[in-house]
Every structure is written in structure tokens, then in C-alpha cells.
Image (cartoon, rainbow, N blue to C red; front, side, top):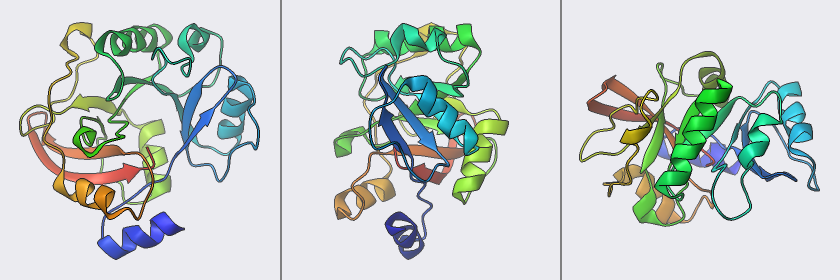
Length: 212
């Protein structure tokens, strides 16, 4: 409710997601209204998200902090996607996430996972249609073809999943409006922006932001 009120106040869509630390690692979900009050198995959490018609991804699955699903990606069923571009994860671990994502036929997601302002907007997720509400955001992720993207100079070229070699860790120029929200301190959440494009090389405008 606080995020929705602030979104209306600033005229900028904010979609709140939930990152849950399952017994096998972190999973981020949108479209659910709560999380278990204690750690449960990754499969139980995924089942809960599916019951609510939400969307869930394995975030930073191969980060070396014992918080990712890692090879358990092959053991769970019903996961929607994998975070293959994570702004707080080393390049090689992102590449491994991409390989697993392609092997399992899951949707590839990009996220800045910003914990400092300089990281905001480093990686994003492209959606083919503009979304303005959380249900539309969840539908866009689930029924359309989201694509991870990375910041490069003044544009957000869409990352081509066919090549593992073009994931980069380049410096970024973050979106000024997102930084303004961050620095206001009114929303204590990480950043996971989604963007709309005129084409793969020309950044148009931010269309959505979720709680990651």
C-alpha cells in the first residue's frame, strides 16, 4: 500500500515483488500477497506462487554466497524464469545462470539488484508491451517474451540469449528518476526496472519498476 501511494504521488509505476529465502536458495516472486513466516522448500514456495497465479524466478542462482538454487534448478518444477543478468553478481556466475536457463527452457530475466545508487539500472528486463499495473506486469512476464538487457552508454541494447559471450559488466549511467526515488528514502526496496524500447538501440522511457 505504501508503494502504491508513493507511485501515485510521483506518477511513476512501482511494482513490489518479494524475495524469499527458501531452503535451497532465493526466489523472487510477483503477484502474491505474502510469504511463509518460516523457510520452506523451494518447491513449496514455487507451488504457492503458482496457486496465486504469480510469477517467480530464481535470482542470482550461482552467486557464491549460498543463497542461490544452483544445480537445484534442475530439481524444481514450475519455476518461471532465471535471473541471468544480476548487477551484484560476477560475470562468470551470470553466464552459468544463462546456460542453465537455456538448458531448462525458462525465461531469462535481468535485474540491477541495486544496493548502492551507482548500481541502479545496470541490468533491466525488456517487455514488449507497456505495463502500468502489477497484474499487467505479471502477465507481461508470464505470457509475453521478456528479455534481459544491459546498460551501454546511453542505450539499453537487448541482450541476445543465443550468445553467452556478450554479457558484460560495464559501468552505467543510472536513470535519474529512479535515483531520485532511491535517495528519497521513502521506499526501502531494491530495484528491478522494466523498460520499453523504440528499438534495440534507442532507449525510450521507463515503464515499470518492481520491488527488486
